[in-house]
Image 1: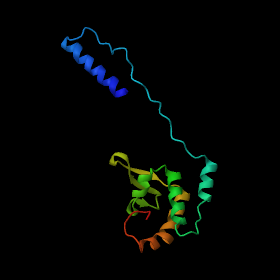
Image 2: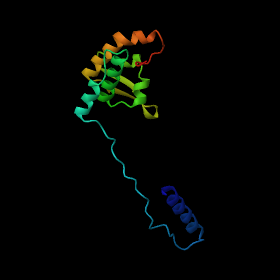
Image 3: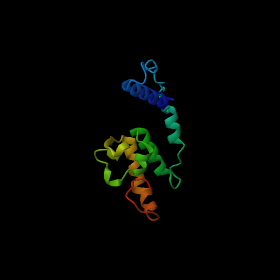
Image 4: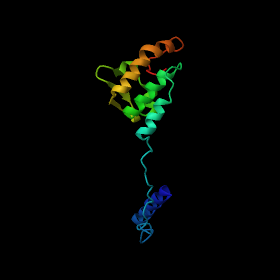
Length: 140
């Protein structure tokens, strides 16, 4: 509907400019507003339950735990997490460089718990996964 209203407004402005019409009947039309809502987020209890539900003794448990910790602690988008690369993670400074929407690069602080989970995954599980796959992505 918004596009139709905009098109009509432009069309009648054009006709008014050409002298084809004497007045613009769309002057009083207002564009429909779409309410924007913030995305729903987990509360602290739900986040803890999610983390506790991960079996870290399962083959991919440490990886999954590190992924959830990183998502939760840093607010990364899923695509940013999937494309996160080893060379962009600085464990000492606890910073991850990510390429986000619009191909924009930003530095994301990584919390202590997320760093610990990442360290566990990188030292234990990731080397095992490398035997089946290659790549410089953090999460295989």
